Amino acid sequence: MAMHDDEIMGKAYDSRLMKRLLSYLKPYKKYVIAAIFLNIIFAAMGPLRPFLTKIAIDDYILTGNYPGLMVLIGILFGILILQGFIQYAMSIVTEWIGQKAIFDLRMQVFKHLQKLSLRFFDKNPIGRLVTRTTNDVESLNDMFSSGVVTIFSDIFVIFWILIFMFVMSWELSLVTLAVLPFLFYATWVFRRKAREAYRQMRKHLARLNAFLQEHISGTIVLQIFNREKKARKKFERINSDYRDAYMRSIFYHAVFYPAVELISAVAVGLIIWYGGGSVVQGALTIGILISFIQYTEMFFRPIRDLAEKYNIMQTAMASSERIFKLLDDRSIIPDPDVPAELETISGQVEYRNVWFAYNQDDHVLRDVSFQVNSGETVALVGATGAGKTSIINLMTRFYDIQKGQILVDGIDIRTVRKADLRKHIAIVLQDVFLFSGDIKNNITLGDDSISMERVREVCAAVGADRFIERLTNGYDEPVKERGATLSVGQKQLLSFARALAVDPKILILDEATSSVDTETEILIQKAIQRILKGRTSIVIAHRLSTVQRADKIIVMHKGKIREIGKHQDLLALQGIYYRLYQLQYQDQIEGQANGVVVK
Image (tube, one colour):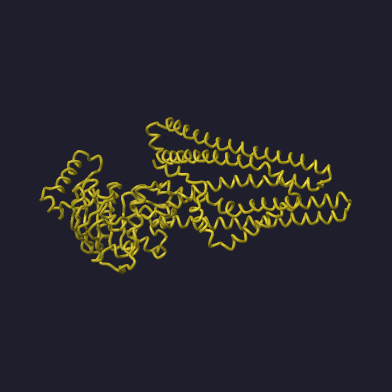
């Protein structure tokens, strides 16, 4: 199942992953050092207060030295103010470091996703990749800002407390630390139970997210077939599983923290028992006893915080494992080390003995060879799965071939940069994708070199200007996600305008008119005849009426080229093309209600 990858937990701490994570802090090393330095100072200021309390009681209160006491109170007040400023600076610096590191990591993930080939996206759901770029990256923010740096604060607080305690009384210090074995055991049990509970939470949350994504996207199907109630019941089960797993996690936290408090109380009791007896015997001062009680309460607070840091670390390890698995994926079609130049082309395309398979030896193209001269229009026809779309995917190097060559102007496309190749090619797909924004930006795709005059020109050429000018804001009309407010025909016209805006030398139309009505198709066909002049074009279409004027028609069948020729010549052969034509002609007679017209 797709969610299995989301259930991977890995180790609670993995030095290999941590080393890679810490590399994102390297550009900000000076700020990390500054944050650690501030943490050391801040950590010392807290334990300093009970020590000053001991001095205040023993040296000033019990001796009646009021002026000295006021001076000490002033020092203590100054320490509190300084501690507040340091804490403020520390929070700003650590959060700044965390956000910078997260920004860099998120940019690296997005940049890597853009480099991956379509073969990678064929195997990985988009929802999972979005989760990697958002949720998983964001979950590392706590580790960068509150984990790696501030964990030093907790460690140094414990360190300073132990120093002050042993300086005042090593015997009472040992009595206080007698409870540590019980604390370590409680922490070990909590860590083991919390880890299992967290694993279950992540598993059920992955199921919950997957279910929501699928059923929100498929809401229309549920409503049509009246399956809302069944979907709600299934969601209720998944939701309750997640709730129960979450409650188990809360239970372990609810047990652990009171257990720490209980152990802390036992430690205070031991201090009062042993220390109180020492005070009565005159071996210990009352100031030291009170200071130890404060230190005991202070000692267990960072230990509780370290338990929280463990949860942060566990989340970070799980998220980083998934992120680095994505970043380590090498499903990238490489550019050549020494690329050939492809600045200008005439548009000649040639396939020489091309073999291609999506999955190892399961070839979808077998020994395909054909040539398209500059300015020619070539149509690819054949049944679904014949290999038509694969041919155009290979021309743009969305995939690489296993055997053979694909040449543009006599140059093997594997010897040029992908960007240099693709700037000469434009594709109009059957399933049009529009971005949120406005009409103009969906045509230019943010390319400032495409002027508004050019936008109007290409829209007029494909007939899109007719509906655009009727919109309230014209070319500035907002476009919702995936063009939800536009009709299928309108989106198709915009995709034509988008392709023509870059003035490509090679134009590919993949079932580009299959989703439009007859009137819009006629409008597009008239525009295409003007647009294709001077361009090499490859047209894929099931409607044979759209390819009859092509200079050459290539008939595909089971990954092989079976027939090549003009429309009338192929009909005269009475082969595969003839049978396809006869089938569509019969459909015209029997299904005029579907608007199928074949001339």
